[in-house]
Image (cartoon, rainbow, N blue to C red; front, side, top):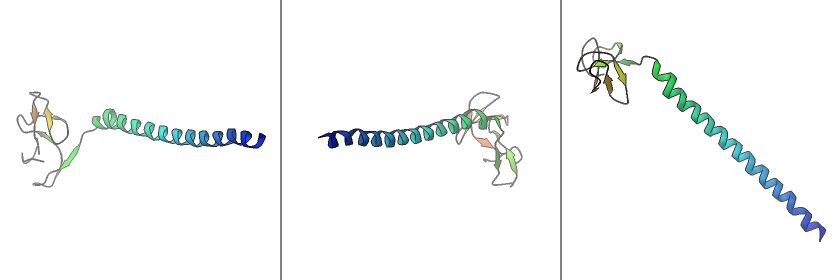
Length: 98
């Protein structure tokens, strides 16, 4: 009777070590994801974004279509810094959509 009872704690330890290893790996992946999200949100937004104009072919920093003022860029649109309203991004040279 001593053999089956003594084998159970070793099996439980192996399973818990595997579970612990999987938990550590998942925790590290979540930590890396959070670091990448923080980088994108706080550091990457501070750099000016350059766009390639389809019409004049220049690499430009987009401006707003309403006041041709600098914009705070969002996804596929921006916020005009002059009037604080949503606007489309245009090329400062040829004034066409980027």
